[in-house]
Image (cartoon, rainbow, N blue to C red):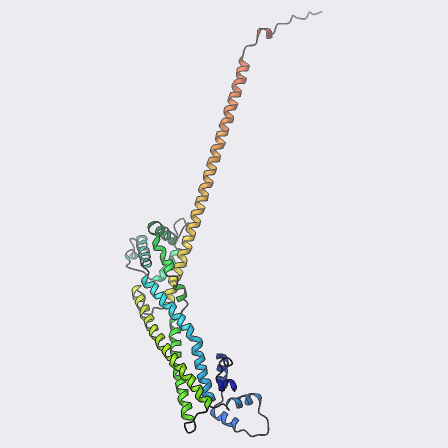
Length: 347
């Protein structure tokens, strides 16, 4: 009861206030508890409720505090989400390289589909970008997206800047625009609820005289209403601007009427991730090709070296054989002439 009288938010957090609101007795139940004069002691739950209802305007206090805490808990998330959406929209509209890359993809697609009904397309849906990483060459050694990455690297490396410029789209892909709008409406409802409860406290006061603690409570709530109302008005105006930006982006990319920003930003994010992987794979393929070339060169050098050694050996053998032949065909000296032996007499 002390925390409720003093509006102590360190004790009464959102969860506790929510539980209190769920436990609040109806006016009839509150009257029965407050008027109970029986001899039997009330159960712990009824004793707790008896203490709660002893606080003047207990229901209005709990309702106001819960609305205030709900606002303060979620306002930071809404500000962050709106900031992400604004940055993502600004990035999409300002990025010059992304439309050029899309135009390049369209031209390649028309070339590959030449002679078919799809060979003269004026555009394509962004969701088609996910197919590029799965479209492989005839020998299945590379993908169409890898080829596009190579083409960008060779023709104009600056076109790859969309990867950095649209990096914020990954956060925007996790931001639900409908959820932001719902929370903004919830803030407005909370503010209106607090105003209504304050008016109720004033109208229910005896002879228009409020207890000192109730007066202090109302003053604190009115200060909160002043700042929170200004915040909600500003955020609502910002949200209108974001929705207009999203509409412009949908028209720019030819998205359908049921355009869903979350899916759009998710598609862009997946394409960026696929493009990064394609570039990485190109680098690995290049390193692998260089290693194979070096290995082939070493093998060639080894083969040439072996052939040279073989020639040298054969040349050496040929020289040796020539010397042997010369020795074999050289005439014997006279002293070495073999004389006929006299026949041994036959005794």
